[in-house]
Image 1 (cartoon, one colour):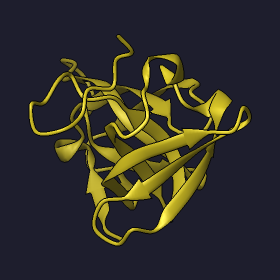
Image 2: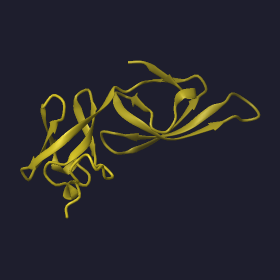
Image 3: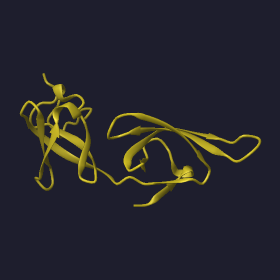
Length: 139
């Protein structure tokens, strides 16, 4: 796990704050006439979905979050949990239905992108529409 300094913090970069994975939502570089430069950042906590505003001095660093994205096929829903299968390893993963945004739009066999932090699922991204994968939107 590497460190990311304020010069590399841009929207979409994943960092860890207090042991929780966050994504940078916005970054504003401020160079006042007096004193050192700093950055105003807005982060989204990927585990709790809460927002966090922070001001960091130029040169401050945060640890990089170990985030992976895997294409998985949605298999079925048992009412409380949704079951997904990794397209490469065929490993199966259960995610609480309440944690999947847009679960009502998904149909069985559609391929989605699952965001993982230390093998723990954080979220599911539905495809916009790809001709190579089954559509996720219910007809």
